[in-house]
Length: 135
Image (cartoon, rainbow, N blue to C red):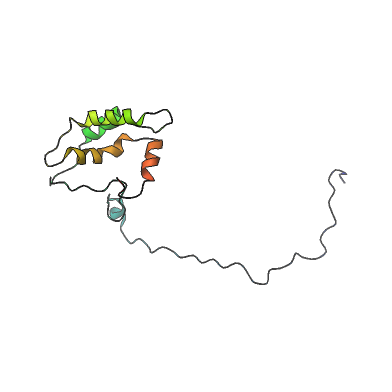
């Protein structure tokens, strides 16, 4: 017997029982998503949206070109760290994107679609938490 480990006598009766039974959980299961795996892998904005409100574009064949995305991604990444200057990064973003043109797409629309590619780390977290259609 260890004199430093003093324990009381063992309980003589079982602990009191809750006679109301286990607590009831009111769980509502979400409706099953009946889309196929192929459909789930397709990017879509329907019902999901994002912070940037979709812009009406006159071009019928609009797509962001990979070189545009790479140029923004490589040259003007905003991290959102405490010492970062958001205005300086926006100026750099505007300078880089001013030379990007696509028929039937306004400069503002192109910049809106490219903007998320200029963000990384904390800035992405900030962007992802913005309300849908807030920009």
